[in-house]
Length: 262
Image 1 (cartoon, one colour):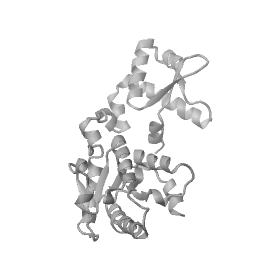
Image 2 (cartoon, rainbow, N blue to C red):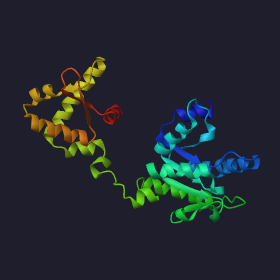
Image 3 (cartoon, rainbow, N blue to C red):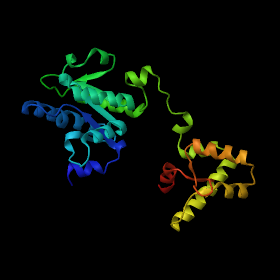
Image 4 (cartoon, rainbow, N blue to C red):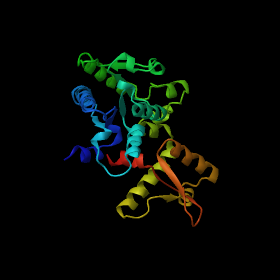
C-alpha cells in the first residue's frame, strides 16, 4: 500500500502533520527530507501515541492541494512546524493552525529562524549541521506533554483570547455523563436507544418523534423539552424537525452510536 493511500485511511486524530519547506533547491529539499525522516518520524514513533507522520508533499490525492492542507491544519491531532528559513508558506499555515487548534510544536534549525512574536513560545532547535541529540528526546517529550494536556493553550490566539475550554461534563465518558443525568433522562435515553437499535436492524428510520415520547412518558411539553435538551447538550442525542409535520424527532448522536457499537 502506498503512503498516499495509507494516509487517506487514517483518521485526522491519528495524524501528526508536519509543516515545513519542501521546495526550492535540491540541497534544501534534501535537508528537510532528512529532518522529516531522521529526526521527526523516529521521535513521533518513540512517543508511542499511535500517530502517523504526514507532510503535504507526500500526498498525490486529487482535489485542491490547499484545501487538503487546511483540513490537516484544522483537524490533525498535532502539528510540527519547522520555522527554518522563515518560509512564507510555513508561517501562513502556522497562523491557520494557531487560529483553529492547539497541540502545535515549533522547531527550527537555529534560534535566528524564530521571529520575535513567537519567541515567547517554546521552540526546539535541531542545529546546523543537524544534531539528533538532544532534539529527538525533546520532541518526544513535547508530544508526551500534549498527551497529558491536549487542550492547553500553546499559541497567542488560544492563550490571549482565552478561548473557553470544553465544559467538564463533556470531558467525561458517556458512561459517567449518563450516571449524572438522573433516572428520567436515563429512561428517555434508553427508549431512544432501543427504538434506534431496533429500527437500524430493520433498516428504517431511527429517530423517535417527540409526540411518541410525550405519550409514552406522560410529560408536559415544557418538561419533555427540558429533559431532551439536557441529553442533547451532553452529546447523547441530536434533533431534527420533519418538513411535513414540523415536529422534532430525536436520534442518538453519531458519537454515542460509535460508543455503543464498541
